[in-house]
Image (tube, rainbow, N blue to C red; front, side, top):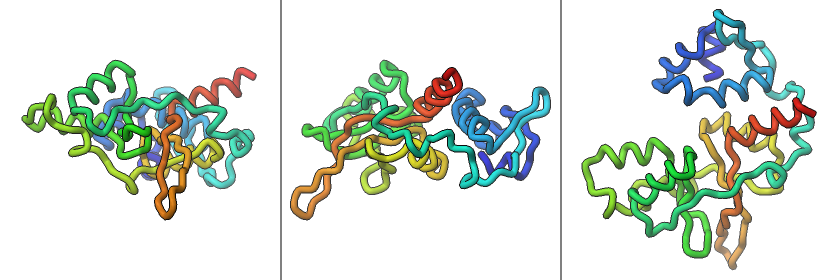
Length: 201
């Protein structure tokens, strides 16, 4: 998104959405983050344009001192033996964009996005019988954060990897095996909420 704004700006939100093949609403939180972080600015009836600021030179507003533990949300999960139908119901009931798949011991096994579930729903198979572990993104392809990581660092991960949510995990070593116990989630909504809270203060 930032590359599009740098190359084509000033550009409207609708044009950015067209370029990315997404709805304007889907970009709302991303544009809010870019604007509030001062990487991008906007003018009414003109559009978004790149400010020329370097990500490393931003006024971080002490974000590097605020930890994920202070801002995380409760994890939204399904068990690894759940069906795609169960996951779709959870997605809509909880009104989230990403669901994490966990084992019976609450260890991270995978992640499911809206796109994953939409593809499965359009695939013509019986979603009541299709297990989520067939369509989920598996470790180690999932980008993680921990309660001890800074909000700034986690926000950079969201932007760099272009994902909507990060599982917040507690790292557990069992001999030579590393497991990740899901203790929360960190999303673009958490960042936007934090910006608002800081601005109000």
